[in-house]
Length: 177
Image (cartoon, rainbow, N blue to C red):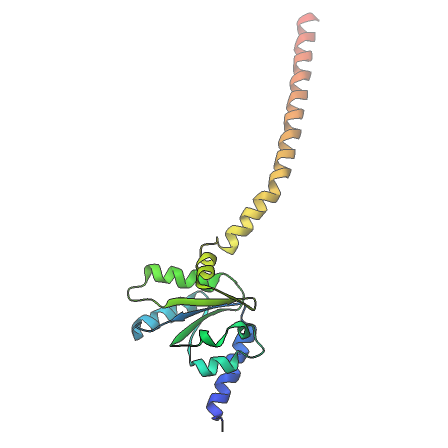
């Protein structure tokens, strides 16, 4: 018979998993308790959830959620999850960035889930190297602005040539006239 506390934990995890846009799973074995607390704070500052969950509860909670894409082999050994509810790239970036600055052994990235699809460790690491959302939006904006800027520059050049021609005609008429 299922324990009411476990049922409640599974229901809470299921609710989190349903809202998740992306999740990175990591092995936290060997990471000290103070390092885990520091990692939790680091993730919270970035509006990400950091959870250490029991594998059996996580498997049950993953049903009918994007995390259903994970297979049973994923839930072996101690795992932690970094969950983002809005930014697809944030968990991968945050975990790899923390690994660069963290004082102790860091959790080892296992895999991830991106929009309901399982991605490998290599794909998570590649995702972490993408520019931020803001940087991508500014790059896209500059691409869109490029043709308009060139058009304005062309029109400005034509007007300058026209004004230059008018000035030359004016000067010529003043000299002759």
